[in-house]
Amino acid sequence: MVPRRILIVDDEESFRNVLTVILKKEGYEVEGAANGEEGLKKIFDSAFDHILCDIRMPQMDGLEFLQESKKRGEESPIIMMSAYGTVDTAIEAMKLGAYDYISKPFRPDEIILTLKKAEERERLRKENELLKREVRKEYSFENIVSKNEKMIKLFEIIRKVAPYKSTILITGESGTGKELVARALHYSSDREKMLFVPVNCGAIPENLLESELFGHVKGAFTDAIRTKKGLFEEADEGTIFLDEIGELPSQLQVKLLRVLQDGEIRRVGESKSIRIDVRIVAATVKDLVREVNEGRFREDLFYRLNVLHLNLPPLRERKEDIPLLVRHFINKYNQVLNKQVKDVDPKALESLMNYKWSGNVRELENTIERALVLTDEEKIDLEYLPLGIQNFQNDVPVVPIVEEEYSIKKTSRFMEMSLIKKALKKTKGNHTQAARLLEISHRALLYKIKDYGIVES
Image (cartoon, rainbow, N blue to C red; front, side, top):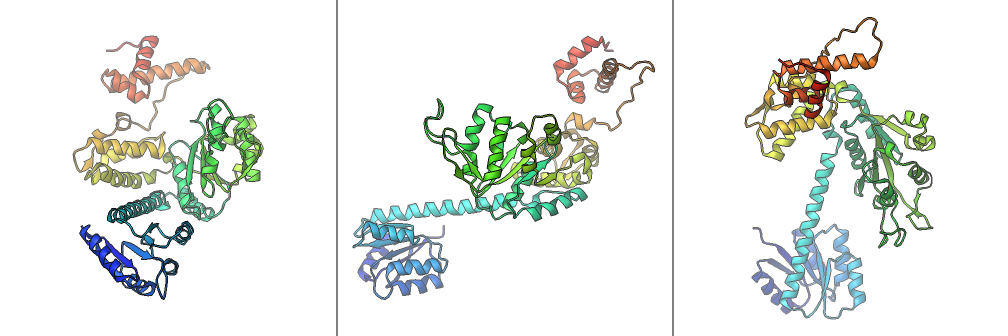
């Protein structure tokens, strides 16, 4: 392990020597400087993990050294020391960027504990920075894999609108990547250092949703035992992602409209408003135009949300992306699962290309993760794909319709019977496999066999 390096800036040579002995016993490498100017030269010429600096020194005192080192971009924690310090001095040092302040004389264990705390803080800071970089990388546009013309045009629009605060409405089927696009918008904007707060409007009970979004004050309702910030406040200066916006109750649609119009929220039980600076990105699988026409969604709110509209095409309309996505997910889950899968069997890839993907990219990702878990080989074979994908056929059987029959109910019944018989024949009477092919439960299949009077051979 590389020893930690410490710089001691103090005009008392005897103190520097005593402190050097203490720190070397703890395994640190130590250098000394007699004043602030010498200390600045040392940090310019070399890198230190921590700096211990006295406040009262000739030529350049500790506070001047602290200010100048911060101007030069020094990131190492600086711990100030003084035998003449006051609370005001400590506060001023912390304001100027000191990590901590310790009064002389101090016991050896005091300074060691202070250094250990500084090391832990630095470890957490670096870990946090690393995680942030990983998050930015994961949610960058480079990870939205596509060569589809519609998607490429969509990327161009996203890059253009990302820097602006304008509200964005993302539509598309479940699993098309609406949250991924919302995160890419956030991490490509100047709000990237602030929070991205995702909210599923359909997953929070209606009686709790207002409090979750806007917060509440103590005593606002029975369980409000303390004042609580809402998610809009948490997202201040960042981005809030309102997923499933079509599920928002009508009373909260009015309050969201006020946020969009005035840039203010009001906690439950509070009379005053709070100004916030939040970018709103909303998403839905619903047809909001139809919801407006049928009176379930406010027209004025729809137009406020629909400033910029991004529609994500389903995977079945961008099948040329399937091989790219398969490769992307293989690489991803090779790392996660510590696997060495290199390829996909041509028959398996053909089945993946032919399948309709009602769950879109999310369903494809889950399928590839499942295949990697099951395989012990260097490629994904057909047998490792779900039976529904293995046996999927594009051609839907043509069911003869009686010329004079107009009943949808009777015709649908006849089609169900035909499909069940075909599935049972394909699986040689295996009810479990047939239910998977038909995409119904095993119990539902047994009920339908009995109801339709299907005789099994």
